[in-house]
Length: 378
Image 1 (cartoon, rainbow, N blue to C red):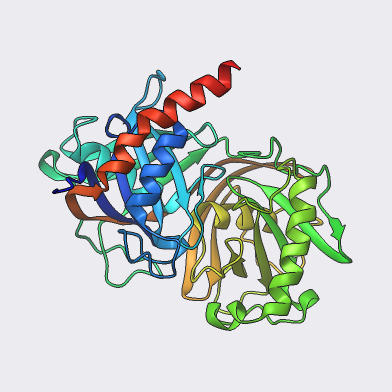
Image 2: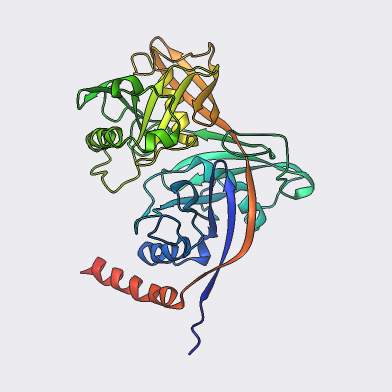
């Protein structure tokens, strides 16, 4: 007997230095457990290649964006980010992704969630994971998304049209406070750390304190098992102190090794996300790192090169180049408030059509939803 698969409308896009599958919320079941079973089938795994799905076998290419019209008065669309584990059977909504966010504006326009203006279009996005808002400025000559251009970002070959991403009210996006432990410095497992959340919860550590330079390649750091075990020990203790609870199965906080800049930037960083070293750096992770550089007394303060003025362009150097973050700040004595953070990203639509999942997975969605409803009412 012929088994018919279920087709789901899907667009694959590169957003910044990430790649993933974008869906309209209406095309997936609303029940989270049923939705996640389907997304695991879409992306494939658990195996290193995600050979039975469209995932790329790496956290940076095993991502999902779910987009819908926003009911909020000051935003156009809602964006829910989901990180699918390539080698596990987990789907996490505990963090944002600023790279995938860059593709949300073009996707929303392409799928008719809002009408593009002639020239450029501002797309205000409600980031469901954290409740924050980002305004994306997308080039739309003639009311069509323009993908080609001369903007280049390290970690992506070639160039494309720039997408300006301006973030608002990022402080404490997941932890409730920019410094969720109440301290600028915390000593964890004998190591000085700065635990900060200005868009992404990160734990910053001087690389030299863990006997590495901070200039190694991602591949070199990934095979340093002793380092990774130490980082995970610190991460678990920091996660609890940062109001994130037990983080053993969570993708936050990220761990960041810092070193003095050596290519004209503000700081050099190597980020673990959290168990694999990022080949570049996440957008919101870079914003948190840049913010830590301007805070007196942080682990970054003595090694960072910080420009003068209330508007600062901060290049966070990483293994493949650097990411430019723009911080608009307001200072009062030793207190510094970040009013707005911005980055330039690019995005490209790779394909649009349907992704197929086994019919049995799709048909089980109703059974899963009913089981969850019974458990909730028990």
